[in-house]
Image 1: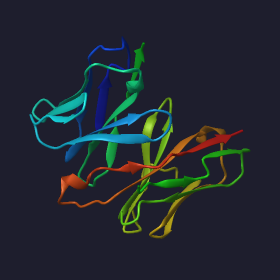
Image 2 (image 1 turned 90 degrees about the horizontal axis):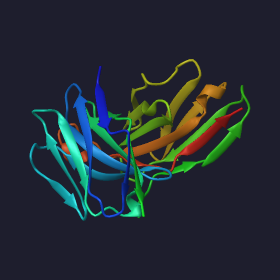
Image 3 (image 1 turned 60 degrees about the vertical axis):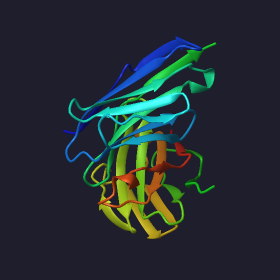
Length: 110
Length: 118
């Protein structure tokens, strides 16, 4: 069965801290791994990763994929209260279906 | 700024009633997905269409759910009859998908329809 597992499920930190969110996967016909941020409503796209070892970066967020060990991490440096959200990891498979992990709920306290 | 739109945004109905949710994908996108999100199950894929043809609806309870794409600008998800366990947020997402190019795997989500069945 295709599976995407995120950890931790919940994380509370202080503003300014650096956080690392984890995503491991076991899926058939892996194509790519995607990270989304979900605040009040719809998930919004952050990154798509297809190649191992190549870091993708956007401002204070960065992500990397390890296709040998089947995991990805999402780093957020100098966190702000606006980073509070649920972060979702998903794998795209052969038919371009996305299988989502259960999400990590990140809370940034001022 | 192209976006996926969904209507209604909120729906409260009574058990046994028919519910229809609508989605307008981003113009030019060839693939439309329907997801359901609950606290317990997270985001689950219900069905998806490519070029308006249904590709996979294995995530959907077939006895009461149906999904259609009558034209390229409209996708519908219908529940008849609705039950309290159908209460969830239903998301539509669209993408411009190519089986040969992973760069097209990104899906863009609509704002969702929050369904409450009493």
